[in-house]
Length: 374
Image (cartoon, rainbow, N blue to C red; front, top):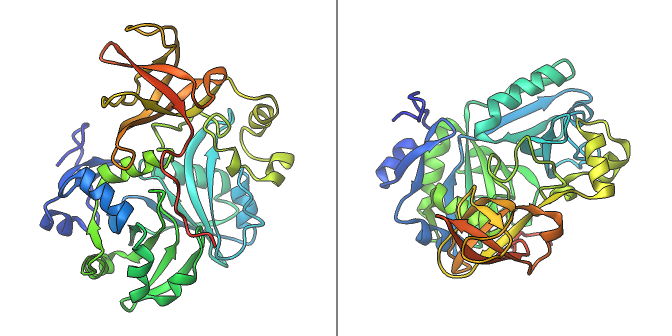
C-alpha cells in the first residue's frame, strides 16, 4: 500500500496480527494502520464498557538524557518539568515564537532520563527541533526498536493486573517499569480515550506475543483508529493537525492548564510573551464543543455561523473535528469560535453541504473522563 504521495507505507510489529484479525488498513502518518475490525461503533462501545487494545506503535518514543535535561526541555515547552517527580507523566506542548503548537507531547520522568512520546506525523520534525535546540545539552535516543500498545477501558486494570499486579497501585499519569509475560515494559497509566487505561512500551520483537496474551483475556478486543478518534472526540481531547497546530496557541485551544504556574511567571520558552499576554488579556477565539440537532454530523472545516436561517449568517468559526458520538448517541464536534460566542448554550449553525444545521456550543468533554486518580 502507498500513501497519497505514492510512498511505500511502513508497518508496525503488529501488522501480521491486524491482517489475521481482518482489519481494514488505511494510511496513517506514513504507516499502514487498522481503521476498524468488526466496526467502529462496536469497538467504541466495547472500549467504554470493557477493554480494547490499540496499536499506536507509529508514535515516536524518545529518551532524553543529561544532567540538566528537564531544564533543557523547558526551553522548548511551557510545562513545569524541573519539578516533575520521578515516575510522574505530564502533558505539554512544543511552541513556536508565535505561541503556536508545533506538537503535543507526553513526558515522563524516568529517574535518570525523560521518556517522551511524540505524535507520529510530527516525530521527524520534533526530533530535528530537539537536535537543533537542545542537542548540545542532552543525548537524544530514538527508541525505534520498541512498539507502543494502548490498553483502554474500565476493565484494563483488571486485565493488566493478571500479568503485573503492581499496576493496580499506579495512578493516572504515572509510569513504571513492569514485567509483562517475562518482558520488561515501560507502562504509563494514561491514554487518549477518556477512559482508564495504560500505554505499554514493549520491545518490538515481543509486541505480537504480548498483544496475543492480552487478546486471550475475555474482556479484550482489538480496536482501530476509527474508534480511537470517536473516543477522543467524545472526551474533548485535541488531535494534532485538526484541533491544534502551529497557528493555534495553548490558550486558544483550552490547554492553559498545561502551562505551569512557575513557567507563566518566568517564561523562557518560545512564544512566552504572546501566551502571557493572552492569559492576561484573553483571546479572540476559543476551542469549544458543539452539539448539533438531528443526526447529521459536521466534519472538519465546516463553517460555524450565526444562526440566521437555512443558509446561516455571518461566519464566526470553523469545525476542527466532528462525527457521530456512539456513547452520546448523536453528532458531536469541536471547533473554534469568536470568544464572544464561546459560552456553553450559545446557538450557532454548522454548515453542511450548503445547509445550516442548528447547533449549540457545548461544555467539554461530552463524556466524563474516568481516569484513576485516587
